[in-house]
Length: 291
Image: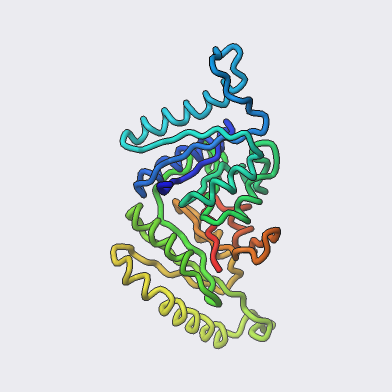
């Protein structure tokens, strides 16, 4: 199957915003856009049926409308619509195994709420083998009334204690495709021994910052060489990594965070940075699996 960006549709404002974002991303990356609507109660396709008796009429209309809008938005974009008589969670995970990226609509601040008929977004984020992007609907961000657009830098939150090649490749590729700067944000908490009654021991914090800067420069060097067109801005702060990532994403067009691929099929592991981004990030959030 040719590379695709898959977006889940349920007719909500959030899923329609996700479809528009996914169309822009597919066009930017020169990929096919797949519109997926999954519903366990879809009826077998009748040989001949009018809209008055076709039980799938509204499902078809949802996909058709989204497809027409995507093609009007990007006339050269290849768009396919798929109706699946299956549980949305299972259908999205299967589609994710065949996709370069999966895009889902996400509700506003607080939690990732219900998607289709149940709590689907979080399990898909936790188990999909490809990056999953969560997109807020219009009016769900801090300023309200504006759907997420492509403007603004890409921000990637990184740790320095393990491999993050997949995370950085996705972030650099995204920044290059958008022709925007990439901010690489790193946070680490100040240890207890560096805390003193009047604040912190600046000698310790300066040494921590210097060490982090050295590690980050070494980590980014091959990616700067691979993507010389991308302007890279480094941000190192002595605070929790979750807080640093969310705060760095203010005004960004995309926040990229990582998650550990589960070691067992039933395991779910979203670290504190991914959780904070999903719950409190203002812009679209890309969660990228890595080893």
